[in-house]
Structures are given as structure tokens and as C-alpha cells.
Image (cartoon, rainbow, N blue to C red; front, side, top):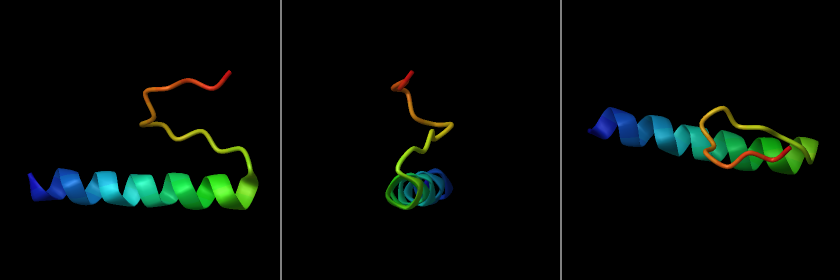
Length: 35
């Protein structure tokens, strides 16, 4: 589904940008937990 791919792409970009900007970012859709 194209919409799902679009959402995942945005989520990935937000995760990468958030990780670079804040240095500590917890994406809601990330299956790996960093506790």
C-alpha cells in the first residue's frame, strides 16, 4: 500500500532527524526498545 510506505518513510525521516537534533529520540513505531 502506497500510503503505508509514505507513512513509514516520514516516520523514518522523523526518527533520523529527531535522533540527530536531540541526541535521544524514542520513535513510537520502533520495535527496538532503548531503556
